Structure formats: structure tokens, C-alpha cells
Length: 187
Image 1 (cartoon, rainbow, N blue to C red):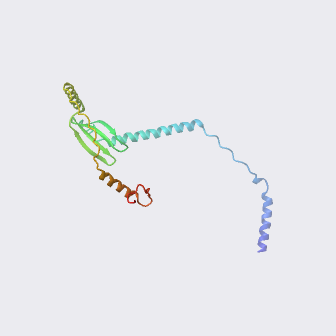
Image 2 (spheres, helix red, strand yellow):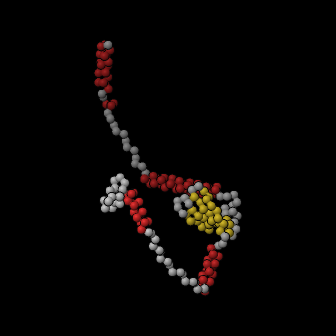
Image 3 (cartoon, rainbow, N blue to C red):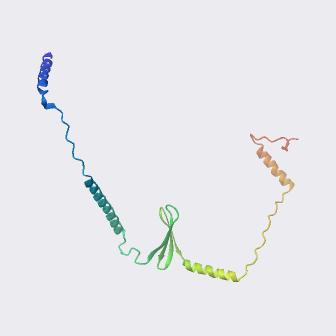
């Protein structure tokens, strides 16, 4: 084994001396050219516009795909949304005109909650209230009766003493001590 180690050491010493010449000098690599700033900005703008166009096309396609097959999208002219009133994050009231009648819909997070057909239009109700006010102004109102004062409770002396005895018994529980003058059971 010593012969092998000595042979390797002699080989290494002879080759190291021969290789230590000019072939192993370090030369740093050449730096690449800096990127073109105009080209980078142009590429950024073009790709951004392409992405925005792709998003707009997707939204347009989704709206077109979700349209009803009838074409108009409003039930052939029979349905019209009059208004919506959001009550909170998930609940809302919607007024819909259906063939001349108004329908109130209430919705929540689970879907449709109620459907009420309103009997008359708001303008008709206002006219009826206006007519009632005109009639009410023509007729004098009867005077309101005077308010009655509440009558004091009619308690007898026995009722008051029984009530006080019950209060004292409740208050004479653990941790509550009454003065001897307030106790009825002591002379």
C-alpha cells in the first residue's frame, strides 16, 4: 500500500508542475448587453392589452351565453323590473310589473322567500288617501276624551303588612342580616 501512495504522490507532483503553466489563468466572462428598455415596455403594454381584451371577450361571451333563448330576455315584454331594495347583505325586496300588475318578491340567501301580488298601484293609493283627507277636512273631528288619571291602588293595612313580612322573610336568607328593630319576630 505504501508503494501505491508513493506512486500517486510522484505522479501528482510531476503533472502539477507541468500543468502549472499558462493554461489555467482565470478570465472573467464578458458581461451581456443591457436589455432594451423600449422593447420591454412595448412588450409589457402589448401583453397587458391582450389580457384585458381576453377578459372583456370572456365577459361578453358569458353574458351572451346566459341570455334566455327568447331573445329579448324580459319574457317577451311581459316582465319589467320596477325596482329593488336591498335590506341587508343577503335579503332584498323586488318590485316587478307583470302584465300591468305589480308583484313584490322577497329574496334571501336561500332564494325566493315570498311572492305577493299588489292589489293597486301606488298612484291609486295616493289618490284614495287624498280623497280621504279632503273628506276629513270637510267634517269636523269629534273632540278627544280627556285622559283619565290612574287610580291609586287600594290596599288595606293587612295587605301591606303581609307584603312587608314576605319581603323580610326573603331578605332574611343566608348572608343578609336585618337590624333587630326591623324584625317582627323579635320582641
